[in-house]
Length: 155
Image 1 (cartoon, rainbow, N blue to C red):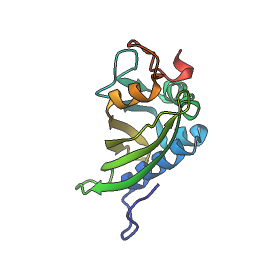
Image 2: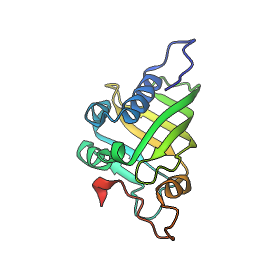
Image 3: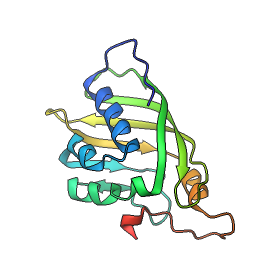
Image 4: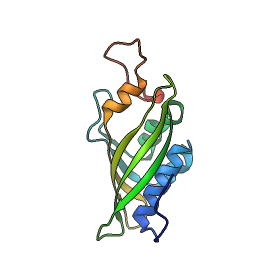
């Protein structure tokens, strides 16, 4: 993951950078430790069949458990947008990788907003990604529409 190292990160920026590092390295058991017990991950643009809101550690771990078997991805060119609150971070970054089931590229630009609770744990993570990129990456070339785009753990 590439983050501009010229300045110290705020607590929320650090949590977001850790989120990206742990997800891209498949460390889901370590990733969940970043989240508050009732923390949420939101996907405002999620396609049919993928939840728009996942809440609580058990639901989050169940949702993300299959990610490392679905995508091999790195997050690069992380650019933080300054906020007035050190417990809130906004970042734009790119994913570079492949969908493991098809070998097709999974590359897109994402904007994320993260908010920490008073204990410094993630209470809200909002991921603005393009589901069409994921659908295309996970759809075999010979397949028609209607492809199941859920992570393997949700099937």
